[in-house]
Length: 560
Image 1 (cartoon, one colour):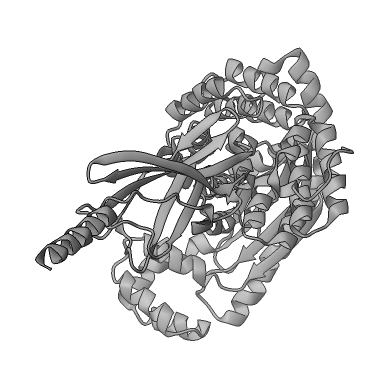
Image 2: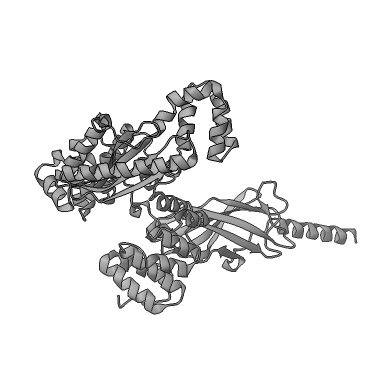
């Protein structure tokens, strides 16, 4: 009887030992689901979360499993970060799964995207360590394919910032003269007609009248009286001064045979209290603060004068230093100086570019349609004006558009050395940093270009590259570019994306490709096919891209 009990105990022990050393069974694909499926890029990366639901009675208590996500594609495979899953008796830092109840595990995956991954499958590889015994289990498929639409964001299509020229075809000049009057008089004295500023004024009008590229567009006269005396008297006096000054100018125009001088406009101010206050503020008159206080306290002109006259100690000084300067007629003529026409500027550029001003040369570039032509103009700008930061920046802009980023960067850096505070140049260097993957530097430089018109598209593209779609759409604002449309697609605002695409200034193959993506996401087959045809007609590499793009997996593209 004792022997039987002994044999029974040994049998139970052996059974227990066998349970402890039992190998782990194979994982099944059905244990796992991946978010998202198919995988989808965020910015330039492929992130995913694999969730495992391990059933009861599967995970051996003494088993430690290293699960490694592996993305497999035609030219190779990319491993993710391994994750440890362990039974409840294992002393490690992995995710614990109960033998009796099973459990849930999370396995993250992230890798930088490259186009070869478009057609791919995501697997899990398993290595088991069970009491020091190592063995592998068959890999299982947990995801497939990659929708890489976010990677269409590119700084290469962002238009660099240009520093605008300050060219003005018509520059309006002002020339001035002043006629001073004696107290209580409206008589123009000869010494005022002979005064240098009045003589120079008339000489300038005669010059403008004779110059073929200048025109007098108007003459304005404003007369006033000093605020000593009654308001009614000063009102009549100021008006008389306006009349005699207007007559003086009309006679002068006849004498100088100037027929085209626009319109003479005239006005008067009975008492120039504003001028009085300004002169007092600038003076060293005793008690000027008291005088200024009276001006603030009293608004009625007669009361103001009375209160100031009561200041006997300073009124004589006011009469001597301030009042005479307020008895005048000011005359101002507006003259338009008309610059060269577009045709004349182009002709001079082709014959003698060195004779053009920097702004004229920069403006000539805006008259040229093609990028190579603009490049030639900006090259001439830096030859004629070697310290023109605008010339170097804009030359770099044309080289950037041409895809010559190395030379463009050299010229941007030259512009920066001439004008370190130029926001346009900072933004442009930031774009090249973005292309080169120096994201921190790109953010710093593009962010410093606030206020530059092109900066919104640059900053929005940076955020798309970082996978921050909401920030990107805020930064884009009202930009009408491919990147701005892509931002709306990634935010699932398809009507907004279509609106932006329809307003892109110079639509290219990417514009139509994005329109096809909008069509696919809104189940519009005709929009998919028609826009892909346009894209392929502009860039035949788009056909192969579309055929491998899961955005179009539900469409027959054989007829393209």
